[in-house]
Structures are given as structure tokens and as C-alpha cells.
Image 1 (cartoon, one colour):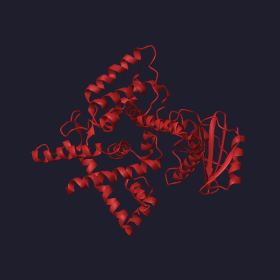
Image 2 (cartoon, each protein chain N blue to C red; image 1 turned 135 degrees about the vertical axis):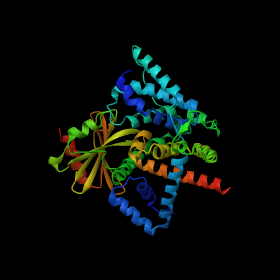
Image 3 (tube, chains in turn green, blue; image 1 turned 180 degrees about the vertical axis):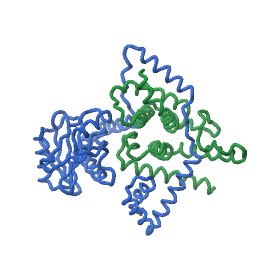
Length: 173
Length: 249
């Protein structure tokens, strides 16, 4: 495949994998989905004219995930705490290296949030992930999820409320 | 009963509002406890997600596999044909329709379809009037608006400027209607806005009018495209727009 295709697609591979991981809720399916999505993207590439490659790729990843039935399967293989293959990285890995207690608490927070996010309905989960983790504007989320902006807004609202309620319920226990 | 401004407050929180609307949102929060609480809740959830939500990175094994498969593809004589993206929920939806047909209620399923589309078209028009949502590409130049749709949509919508007829082109937008991405062309008429939705289809060439919630619509088909014009313009004026648009080269 052309160097041009690689230059357009490969910079967004982390975003693609992150979305696939949250959609399928397990690392194996996420890899399969991204790999198939990139192949699809390669076949569509001639019709792509370059406005927003990230949204374009993420839309294909999403459609591939929805078509793969991995979303249904994922429901019974929700990641267990400690199942951290495809290790998450982020701000949490910075600064706390010297403090084991802090590091442990961080890991527990991670596991808990992973579990609560996995329990959200998939349409709410993908909207929340695209907004809060990928920090995309509503318009781009609408493009990726092929949904009107009004629906993006209400899904985002419901996702945040469900997550906040679930967090409060756990903390209240 | 929820405050009707909750989504506005959320849009403010997400930085989706222009300065004037953001100010209005902030002022509203001063007097609405529910929206004040909602804003605090949004901040808390945002902080939680930033600190504790995993950001997964593509494993090296995946990168290698992708490079390998891309090289194989480029050496093959023809790329594999794209598979249509089907989703499991759409499968279940069609199952539902099948069940309805079996139960002998087909007439009820078919008739409301156009009604639903009319509702969706008007709802989309109303949504588009929210601040910042009207145009994705702002231009009065049809030669700017038309190429903007290339690569964003799988057909080339006809773009015409009717400034000479007092319906200046304001821009274009991508929208989602009738279960597909559609082109929305935005025209002005004095203080009013006309959304013209376009997508491939072969309906009736004869324009048909309908009204919903105070908005007028005109629907017709030509050259393999379905058109829906929507506006709060009075019906006669909207018909003028449609006539001028169809007459323009």
C-alpha cells in the first residue's frame, strides 16, 4: 500500500485501538477490529480526499466493530481487574513511581473505572470515550458515529449521568 | 422535571458554544441550582475520566501485523472488495420488521415512513439553527461549497447559488437523515434560513408540500437525487425558492 496511505492512517492508530478497545472491551477483539478496519480503509482510500483522516478512520473502526459481533461477545468477557494487556498509559503512569501506595490506589481506580465504563450501553460508551478521552468536538463525534449532533449531546449527557450515578453507588456502599 | 437548559450547560462545559451563548449559559447557572449542580457534576466526571480512564495504545504486535498485511495487499493484483458495514443492531431491526410483516401489520409500517422522514427533516432543520451548527463550510461561493463535500460523502450534491434571486448560498453541512449521510445546503432569505437536504434517490419529480410545527417543507426528486427544502419561510416563498433553484443552471 502506498506510503501516502500509511502517512494518513498510522498516526491515528492509537486512537483507533483505544476506540476499538472500549467498544469490544477486550484486547484480542480490539486488535482484530483495528486490523480489519485498516484493510477496509485501504480499499476505500482512493475515495478519501483528506479533510479529517482521524474521523474517517475512527468511523471505519466503529463500523467494523459493530459488524464484527465482538460487541455482543464482549459482554461476557468484560475485562477482569488486572487484565491489563495492551497496557494503558497516560498521566497516571507519571509521578507516582516512588510511592507504592499511591500506585496501588491508582491501579484500583483504573480497574474500577474500566469496569463501570464497560457496563455502559455501547452507544453511550463510545460517545463518552470520543469526548472525554479523545477530546473530539461534537461535530466530529457526530461524523464518526453517523448520528445527528442533537443525539450526540443527549447520549453524552446520559453517559455522564449514568457513570456519575454508578460511581456514587459504589462509593456509598 | 429537568431544566431544559441542561444540554446547553453541557455544551458550555464542553466548549461548544460561542462567547455570547457561553455567557448566557453562565448567567443561567447563577439562577438555576439544577444547572449549577449539573456543571459541578460534569467537572467531577471530567476529572475522573482524565485521571483514571485507561488510554489504550496500539500494541507493537498490531502495528507489525498491519504493516505486513498492507504490504501483502499492495502486491496483490486487486484489492479485496469492501464489505458492506452491517451492524448487529440493524440486523435486529430488520428482524423486527420481518416479524411485523408476518403479523400482518405491513400497512402501518409503510405509511408512517414518509411521515417519520418529514419529522426527521424538520427536526434536523431546527437542530441546525442552534448556534454553531448551521454550516460546516461557510461560503457564498458554490465552487468552494461543492468540493467541500468530496470525500465526506459518497455522492456529489448539486450546489447552486441563487444570490441573484435573493436566496444567497450561505454554506454547506453534513447531516444524517433517512439512515444515511446527506448533504445540507444552507440558503438565506432576508432573516430566514432554508436548509436544502440532498441525497441520492428516485422519488416523485412533482414537488409536494407539507408543514410541521410551523415549518414548511417542499420535497421533490430530479437527476437521481431526492431533495427536501425546509424553512420557516411562508409556503409561497419557499415554493419560489424551489422553482428558482430548479430553474437555475
